Amino acid sequence: MSNYQTINIGKLEDVSNYTFAPEGTPISIPGKVFLGEQLGLTSMEVSINKNPPGTGMSFFHKHKDNEETYIFLGGTGEMLIDGETVEVKEGSVVTIKPQAKRSWWNTGKDDLYYIVIQAASNSLKAGGIQDGELIEGSVPWQ
Image (cartoon, rainbow, N blue to C red; front, side, top):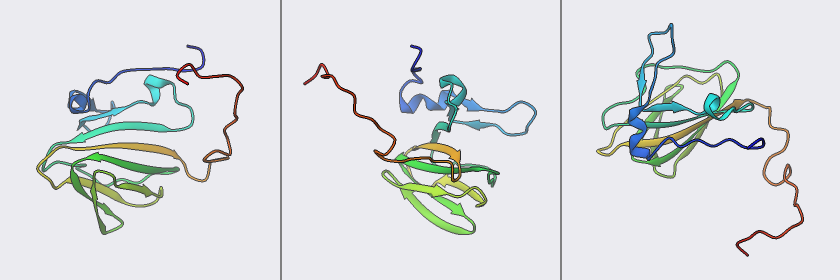
């Protein structure tokens, strides 16, 4: 396992078993698990999130360096970004620049599930297939 790391956080509905509560702050966010430290990530932060109906982020925030991409996996909600309301649902993907003021909440009757990926703005060296390399050999399932 020198070239990879793996963890299992359980089923999506079990994300409510996690609470993000950074020491020394008044912040407590149930249904949020950060993966960076657990996976030894060095180029991004990733979190898995769940908001029950009628709940959401209880404060606005922005970032110093990181842009965020929100990938919505289930439920419906709204994001408030720099004073504009953006409706989100399963399949919605929203990218937000670091300086944007943001918050969100679940407006539906079902849990709102989403992944958030943070990475330093303007740091991507190559995207898509430009960073990949084909390696000779056959995969066992072909």
